[in-house]
Every structure is written in structure tokens, then in C-alpha cells.
Image (cartoon, rainbow, N blue to C red; front, side, top):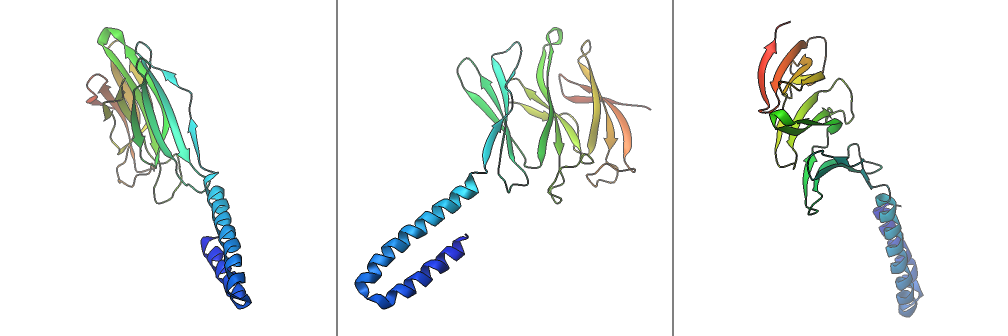
Length: 214
């Protein structure tokens, strides 16, 4: 029952009780008020009971005191869910929250730890959706992001105009080769007009080293 229908019902009952005398009307109005608040409470519960907070399995960040956990919050009628990360310091219980746009879905999470090169970062592949379509589709881009172990630093490794498909890390050089498609027509969708590319990045600086000739 909607709020409008509840108000109309209350008004109808009030008009019917008005002809029975003032005392009778007051008693009836008390019962109507109780009925009104009960219906509104049940209605609110019906809307909220489908909302939930879901957590993925916590991930130990090896060689550090941190644990990473992923959360999703949504409801029955939500096209998208609120998504965020918590970088939790297990020594003192403090945490750093990283929020993501509603059109972003975390596809994969990887800890990159190369002690000889002093590299210890979190890399995430985040898949986006077309906000106008209100749904996810694999023709929309996947972008790579790098995070510091404590979550305080975040940088986009690849551009949002590049559709990441695969990658491989070389643990000797600390560099990563990324393959995918450049969005030539800038329509935010992967189609036949896009250009296949292979890119080389430095994980330590998060900078593009070169575009590999094919």
C-alpha cells in the first residue's frame, strides 16, 4: 500500500466517523492513527528488507599488516550497488575506505609483490557499465588501477579510453605488458573500429614506457 493510498483511506475513515458525534469521532480517530502508523511502518520494512550489505572474503596483503576487504551494498530495486574497499590495519584496527562509482564493478584483485624491486602494490581490473543503459555488458571498458598497500594512494594505470583484455607481469624488470583495444571512435564501447594495441608500463612509477609495434 502506497503512502497516498494510506492517506486517502485515513481521510475516508475520518469523514465516516464525523457523523457519529464528537466523542465517538475522537475514539475512532485514535484507532485510525494507530492503523496509519502501523501501515506506514510495515511499508517501510517492506522496502528496507531487500537492502543488504555483502562482503567478499578478506584478502591478506602478504608482507604487511594489512587485510583488504570488498563490500557491496544494494537493494531489490537498485540497478547498481554501492561498492567500496576497506584497507584494514590489523595492528590497530584503523581502516581506509575507497568508494567506487555505481557503474564500476571490480573484476579482479591482485597483490604485486616484488621484494628485489621494492614493489608492493594492489592492482585491480575494474569493469565499467554504460550508465544510460543501466546494465553491465562486456563491450564496455575494463581499466587497470594501482593502489598502495594502505589504500592511501590510487592511480589509474591505463586510460579510460583503452579496453584492457589481458596482461602479464615480468618480475625481473617490474614492468607489465597490457593488451587491449583503443577506443578510436570514443563511443565507450568495444566495436570493430577500435585499434588493437600492446602497451608496456612501469609498475613502480605507473607510467607508460612504450607502445609496442605490431
